[in-house]
Image (cartoon, rainbow over all chains, first blue to last red):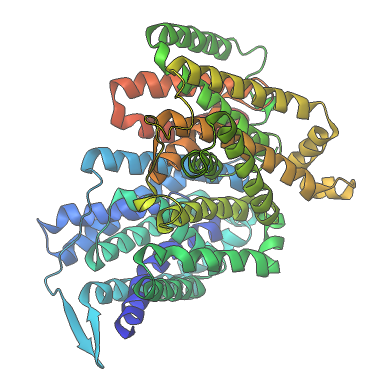
Length: 289
Length: 311
């Protein structure tokens, strides 16, 4: 069971990374991106397509760029300028856009399972536990990306501007902050994180467009369980749910791998009063300058 | 106006001639397609039932559910299992499917309608995925990976299978019933309550409206309607699989028909006609692109409407 826990912890990192992207866009725009799973798949396919021509590490940058481009387009679609938009409208837009992207990927590349081969494959033993090199690479990428994002948000000048735009967009706009560009910028960063998560999934195992609907659920569940808007907690939620899912699939049957995410989501929705109350402040949407 | 874009008051205005002409063209196209492919009329009315099902919760109550397809699937499997295991007649099994879906709607509705907006949407997505996982992982419930086939020949056949025309007639009947239910709700206090909830839920609570019971009733009716359609569909396709009965495309059809057509009593039906025209017409030309069209269509319609309202 040790390897299952360890590899689950590592594999959950990529899930957490994609959910952090969702949480970042929610933080600045108040819109929840249901197309993030589609962006993860865009990144994974970009990595897979370029892995043959480039090294797997080079493919990582292509995956991030592909995901970033998709994230930029999606954020432009789901976050309006100049009008108040309810969260549900953004959800509908993300849902439709995500389905169209996944269906287009399926038409172009089929729904066969693919994976990105690393130069260093197989398992390595650390403290008596076999660790998948793909999972380890994925976790390192996830951790690095999350630390970078958190550092940029909290410690840099651009982070201060982003925080101002997130806190009060109207005032920030009056103070000369280009709020619209900030939102699409965060959307692109969020997409790049999803692209990296896709690359991580590709090197850790296999991916297919058939996974899209469960990815939508897993990413949304991790974002909600992590307390939307919190980077560290979201990553931890992804890692923990990944580990528990891995153990359950090892002990019971692989099809039950998503059960912890469902149970975690249920508990978060039922037991956290903050979640129930949080709706009222953002339900009506924001008016962007 | 929670969903905003699906409110009937934001639908095409009387003076908007170009949109009216476009709807007339859609109607003409639908008649031509119906004459050219009479076998696809059942699909049109299946879409109409699904649209009215989503209209009950998404349009009237303003709760955007992304997992309403789960009740279509539950109704389908319940009817198929009743026929396969209990030897129930189809004429009893498909209303039974609707009843089972409605019961699940009552239970789930009471749980998921405690949250709103984003959290409600995520909860309904989780519901759909959970139902799919249960059906594929429970070996005693259905066959391998949730695949179940209803016997249509031999001594143990519970009911002779209706003809294609018979199935079409059934879908027409259920679409009619669903439309009458929507019309009836609009004339009752429940309809008034849902209208206030859709516009401002907090205000509805302040006015003394029993908010949660009203929402749960709408959710249960929506689930029952979807379950009835699922029960008929199950016997039509004979061989069921989770990927067919819980298909994301069906969720999109539900949502897109109401967004394109608008809410109210008859508007979702014209949305269903448009979706059917697209799915059957374009899907016939380029079958793999049907989902791309459907997904993109939802996004484009909302963006156009958003721009129109902003200007």
